[in-house]
Amino acid sequence: MAIGVKVMQRPGNEASYVRATLKGMALTFRHLFQPKITMQYPEERSTETWTISPRWRGTHRMLTDEQGRSKCVACGLCPQICPANCIKLVPGEDEEGNRYPLIYEIDEFRCVFCGYCQEVCPEEAIHVGVHYENAEYERGRFVYDLERLSAQTHPVSSLWDPTDPRGE
Amino acid sequence: MTPELKGFLLVSVLKTVVVFTFVMLLVAYSTLLERWIAAWIQDRVGPNRAGPKGLLQPIADGIKNLLKEEVIPGGSNKVFFVFAPAISLMAALIIPLTIPWAAPFPLEFDWTLPLLGRFVHHGATPATVTVLPVGFLFVLAISSVGVYGIALGGWASNNKYSLLGGLRGTAQMVSYEVAMGLSLIPVLLLVGNVSFPEIVRAQQQGPIGWFVLPLALSAFMFLVSGFAETNRVPFDMPESESELVAGYHTEYSSMKFSAFMIAEFASMVTISMMFVTLFLGGWDIPFTHWDEAGGMRQFWATAVVFFVKCLFFLFLFMWVRWTLPRFRFDQLMALGWKVFIPMGLAYVIFIAIGLYVVEGPLGVTSPAARSGLLFLFNIPVLVYVFRVLDRGHLIRGSYTQRPAAAPRPARAA
Image (cartoon, rainbow over all chains, first blue to last red; front, top):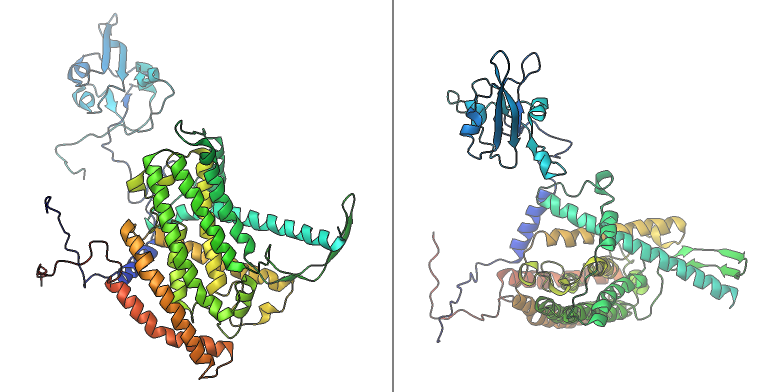
C-alpha cells in the first residue's frame, strides 16, 4: 500500500449495541426527572446556593459626606494608578483652600475593573460596586460623570482583604 | 347532487379540517415538546418565556418564521427550490388522512341550508377521512414521494452540502422504504387485508390481539425504518449538522425552512400513528370490548386512547434523539441492506410457516390463541436476533474483517 492506511482495531466481540443503547436510554430517562439547577435570572437574582460575591468589582460609585458633597479631594492618585487610563480628573480649590474635583469622569468602556482606584483612594471616596446591569442605549452614556457616580446606590465592593484571603 | 352525497361531502370536508388542524397543532406542539425533552434530558429548564410555562412558544416561532427574510440563492434552480418544501410538506400531511383515529361514531342530521339545499347524513361514520381499500400501500407510496422534496431541495440549492444531504436522504429513504415494506408483509399475512380499519378490527380480538406480540420483529423493524424514513437521529444523515452544515435545507430560510421542519415533524406524527395502527391496535382499548359498541362516548374514549398511544411514540422519537449519536453512513446502509432486508424476507417466511403450522396441523382457529402461539414462536427468534445485533456481527462498517494475523492486544486485567 502506497499510503499508510491506519486500520482501526475496533472492539469486535466485546462490543455491545443493543445493551449499550438501552443503558443510554435508561440514563437519559433518569435525567428527565432530575432537579434543574438553572437560575431564572431576571426574576431570581440569587439562590440559597449562589449569591453574587461581595468582592465583585463592577461599575463605580462615588461616596458622599453628610452634606451630600463628594468625598473626593482631587488628590489625583486614582488617575495616576489607573492602568486603563479611564479616569479624567480636573481639580479645583475653594476659598478655604479645600480641593475638590471640578470634573471627575470615568469611561466605563475603558475601565478594566481592577479596583486599584478604590484601593489607592485615601478618602475612601471612589469605589467599585457590586453591580452588573449596565445596559445603555448609546455609547456616550457609558462615561459616568461625578453627579452620576454620586447618585449610584448599589453596594460597594469589599475587595480582597489580604488579612482574610478567603473572605471568612 | 343528492342530499346524501352533499351530506357525505360536508362530513368529509369537516373531517379533513379537523384532522389537518389536529396534525398541525400536534406538529407545532411537538416542536415545543422536543425542546423541552432536550432540555430536561440535559438537566436544563427549556423554553418557558413565551406565555405561561412557554406554551405560546410555537406561535412565537411561527410568527418569527413568517416575518423573516426569504432568501433564494442566486445560483439555484428557482422553480424546484420553491417546489421542494411544498412536496415534502404535502407528502407528510396526506398520510394522516387515511388513518382511523377513533371508533366509528353515529352522526345523524337532516339540514336544509339557504342557497346550498338539503344535507342528509345518517348511520355510523368512520373516524377517518377516507377508508382506503389500499391502506398502507398508499402510505408507502406517498412516503416515497417525500423523497422528492429532499432530493430536489438539495439539488436545486446549488450548494455542495445541500446536494450531499439530498443524496444521502434519497439513498437512505429509498433503502428503508424496502425494509419498511417488508416489515409490513407479516401484517398482511395475519389480516389478509391492507386497509387500516380492517387491520384495527383484526387486532381487537382476544385480551391483547395487538400485533406487536405475534409480529414483534416486524414491529421492531418498522420502528427502526420509521426512524430512518423520518430522518430522525440516529439516522439524520440528510441533515447531519456536524458534517453538512444543515444538509438539504442549508440554503432555505424563513417559511420554506419552516415547511421542511413541519414536514419532518409531521412525518414523525405519521409514523407514530402508523405504528399505533399497525401494531398497537389503533384506537383499541385493551382488555375490553366496550369500545367496539359504537356511540359518542366510545368515540371520544378511543380518540383519547389513540392520542395517548401516539404521544408515547412521539416521546420515544425525542427520547432516542437526545440519547443516541448519529450512525455512520455506511453503517446505516449496512443496517438497511445487509440486515433488515434479509431479516424482513426471512421473517415473512417464518411467519408464513408459523401461520401454516398454527392453522394447519395444530388446527387453532381463535385469533387470540393464534397470536399467543405466534408470539411463542417469536421468542427464540427475538433472542437470537437481539443477541446478534448486540454483538455487532451485522452492523460492522465497510472495513470488513480485521486482518487475521494481527493478534488482538491483550486487555488489561
